[in-house]
Image 1 (tube, rainbow, N blue to C red):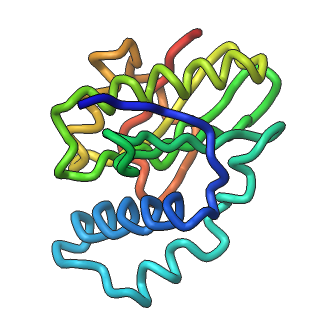
Image 2 (image 1 turned 180 degrees about the vertical axis):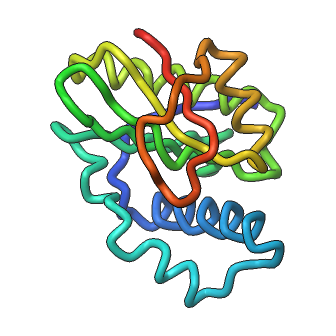
Length: 158
């Protein structure tokens, strides 16, 4: 069983399905109940995904034995900084190394875009994500935004 992580447009059917699953999980955890189809649709409307294409960013899809199982986005914020976003591994594929490969591939994309630092924000309840970032060299930093769901901020120099 092997992983393969490649760039892909954010709006392909598989990318869209991954983005919907991501939003469903993070919204469901936040609200304490499954998100409705309408709520997912609203959450993905005007979410900035159109910036996840070169030269303003990139979207990566991880496939496990050919099955779309993970995704991550990268948005260039300024010439030196990019923001990691929409990092998601479907539950059935967690614990198989996909998260680490996804982070490494996204960091490679950031370097190729000339970025020197990757940052992200996340919530307290996303403990698996926070642990993944810490294991891969991301350190908590002071808040760099005031997003309504931002409770922890991380950065990594490339």
